[in-house]
Structure formats: structure tokens, C-alpha cells
Image (spheres, rainbow, N blue to C red):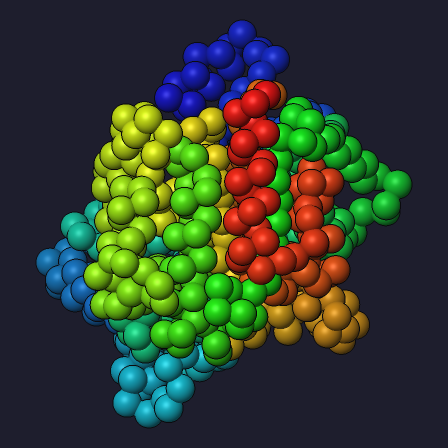
Length: 500
């Protein structure tokens, strides 16, 4: 649709052209569509995703089975058309086979001897196969692009992003290779991840007359000036932040620091999986949804933790609960819906539709939706009015800092900052808080809307974390308190809205 619109309007020299992220941010896509950034004004909406979008476009993963199948298909093609291929073409196809053999050999050796489940890969290790060090990867890549070899080999699996990365034997310092032995989607695989999106976005910035990054929840903002646009002087970067359309009285934002048992709410990765903590969490959510009318959405830090909580809640009841289990008690208060990992867009739409129907038919009883930060329901969904009278975030959804990819990313940030660990910490916290801000931004969608936002973790009381929340939330943010105090505040808040 965007492509047809662009081609149709191009003849008329349109004032406005709309493009999805990949066509704008990827240089090869712009060249293929003959799109120039020169002297134009570029407006990027939902810009909180910008750095992640660039990283995703220029990163790639390939599994051992994909490499083996590619090798098999290419060998069959070479045997069938050997006599028809010119000498130069036979050489390039044979080089491609040798390169695949080298990658396959590396992964097989990794599976047999690597003790860690994942780790960083040196580019030279991937080129250790026989004769591979003599291959000019730039020429080979050019041949693959110009010959359209991938299209001629039925089933030959090639990722465009992978080809983009293989322009020379020494990939830029902006990215790193990784291996993973037990990737959830690919199993044993190689990955290339872009660590620094600056270079790929800089071409757009330098060609354009102006670039406008717009979004409703772009906080924290420091990553844009310190990382994505670090080469620009501060005088060339202008930041405009507007307040919300609602008055502060229409929002109740509250960190919940202790559970019903009196124990601190500490949902760090090391402490959140105990049954006592999960039972306390279930009792807290039950208390809150009994005090909030209509729909309530609770965001969990991961699918695994959501599944773990549901498993514990189904097995036993919390202190003082009359139901057979905590899950039954929650369902008695409001119908419960939850998203599942890998269920697909259709399943997510089905869950959302069922949740909306339950809210609409509940006569104020509403429904409870259990979702995941970064999941299909955390972005682009409007929980306006009764769909989101309450939004809660469980814990702080930090990425796994122990993963090879995040260790490399944080090390890269620290290295660019002259070895500053503070810069890496700030970058790490920003990644977490952008995800939180996206979740809480699902509520309050128009001027007359009102809602409560509950942040379940004692760490939300910390000044560093509070400062990374959007200004419109900070303006209504109360001092952290325990479950009972927050419950009383919720009752008072929503009673006031009834009277209004």
C-alpha cells in the first residue's frame, strides 16, 4: 500500500510521503525505491522504537539447520548447472559453498566443545574453513547481489540483512557476532547484532533538512542525544516535551513498595520466583481489582514469569482467601484473560476482543487482562476509558544483563563513553524504563479519561527510576506505600470520579 502510494504520487511531486520504518531506515531499500533524503524534512512517529528498529533491521540470526539446508540446495544447483555456468560463476558458487562449510563447521564445533550456552564470536573464527581466508567477501557479496543467485536456487535461504553485514572480512566495530546453543526459536545458531545504530541513521540526518522524532512516550530522552545523535552539537538538537491533555487529578500514579504480608515488593530476577512473593503478588492484585471498576491490565516482566505466577496461583490460595486458589479468587472478582507467548497476532486479537467484550458486558465489574512488557499487547493498543481504569506493572523489566548480547552492548556503550560504567548503567535503565513507559501509556487516551497506574516494586521509589518516568506521570506520582494504603487511595480516587 505504501509502495503503490509512493509510486502513484511521485509523478505529482507530493508534499508528503509515508513509509514504514524498514523502507526509511535501510539504505538498500531507499536506493531500490529511489528515495532521496536530501533537503527533505523527515518526521518519525513512535520514535521511542527508533534505535531498536535500526538495530533489528541491521541484525540477523541464522541456525545450523538453515546453513545446512542452504549448503545442500546450493550443492545441488552447482551439480546441475556446472556445465552451463561460466568459469567465474562456478568459482563464486564454489566459494559460497566453502563459506557455508566454514560456518557449519564453526557451529558444530561450538556445539561439541563450548561450555557456555552463548557467547561472543570473533569474525576470524567464522573464516577458519579450508580456503575461506582467500575469499574476497566484498566481491562475493557483489556477485550474489548482481547474479540473483538466491532467486535461482529453489529454497535457498538468505537473509538480506546478513548480506549487508558481509561487505568485508572485518565487520565494523558497531556490531558483533554471537552464538547461541539453545535459542528459543532457532536452536543452535549464529547471530549478528548491531551495537551502534548511529552510522545507519546518520546518513538520513545529514541528507535531510530536518528530522523530527515524535512520540507519546519517548522518555527517557538521554539516549537520543548521547548515543543515536552523539556526533551533533547540542545546539542542533531541540527537545520539546508537552504535558498531558488531562488534569493531574484524573491520574493516580502510585508505587506499591510492600505486599499484603508486609514483605518488601522486590521483583528482582533473583528474588521474584519464590512462592511467597508470587502469593503476595496475587493477593495484592486481588485487593486492587476489587477496588478498581471496569478493566484492569497488569503487565509482567516476561512470559516465563507470567506463566510461573499463574501456575502458583492455580495451585493454592493466599492468606484469608475463601476461594480454592488465588486464581479462582481473581476470576471471582473479574473474568481473567492472559496472552501467551508465540500464540500469534490472531490469538492476541482474540484475547483482546474477549477482554473488551467482558468489560463492556460487566456492568462495572470489568475484567482482568494479564499481559507482558514488550508483548503484543504492550504497544499500539489503546486501553481507553473502561478498558484501562487500572494499569499495573510488576517489577522492572530489565533485559538480561548476563546474556552475551547485552554484555557486549553495555561494554560498547561504556567504551564509547571512555570506560564509564555509569553510561552503561544509564543506557541499561533507559531500555527498561522505555518499556515501562510504553505500558503505562496505554491508559489515558483522551481529555476526559481517567485511570490509576500502579508500579509494583520498591525500586520505583528510587529517584533515578522516578526521574525516567514521563513528566505527566511524575506530576501525579505519590510516595510509595503498602497494598492496604494504596487500596484505600484507589477507593477514594474512583469514588471521587463517580461524584464528578
